[in-house]
Image (cartoon, rainbow, N blue to C red; front, top):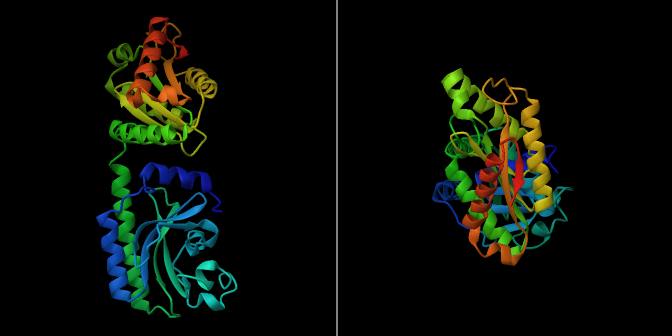
Length: 325
């Protein structure tokens, strides 16, 4: 496993790379590699959990293989191009089912693909069923194409971030939430969502000024994000002073615990707020959870509406509260 496996998995979730559809921007690169290098297979692979997923692949029909068989699982542990001239003579791979059986891999060359935080999430690779070596210009080509792919992923990550807080934006939240709702519905897994609003933020903005308000939004956003311990959880900016947190595979009791912890931890930041009864910045939290097939029937919009109702109830009850509905 990668030494930063949890963080690596979080980036994969954020970039939404493990999906059914192929993407033309990736396919262009793998087609070019296969044509220029004359190899049997070229692929952009994502090493995800217990598998290697082919986000783009030319010359191979399968979409994934077990991670323990994946050459790419070795490549992501290194810093540079990982080359195996003849896998049948390499002790690490000679007994690998992908070597002893179809597709009978002999040659492999893979460049680790790094996300915006420099964690390797997969590889851009060339594979052949005959032993071979890479010429210097071929090495350079693979590395240049890997650089283009990383730039594409960087633009992808920037397009889903809120420019002020650095959290995911509303568009990404909507897509992620719907996707997690469908996944939970298929397998009847619990799914929780929390809406978090900064109390008395309008008066803070008016008395402290826009610059101070923006700094506080950034501080609270960073704090909320830092409190999420699991790779699959996300925090996003929902609207002006409201944040949303999605907690996949989290039941109502667990979500209530997270909600209380977040409320208490923001208050402990002791951000001065003269217009607040507590004299420090506080938040109100409203949450909701689906745990059964019947709960899923109203759809993901129904789950979000319940969380919104809980947030409104928390604010009407005096703010600085966490309620679940």
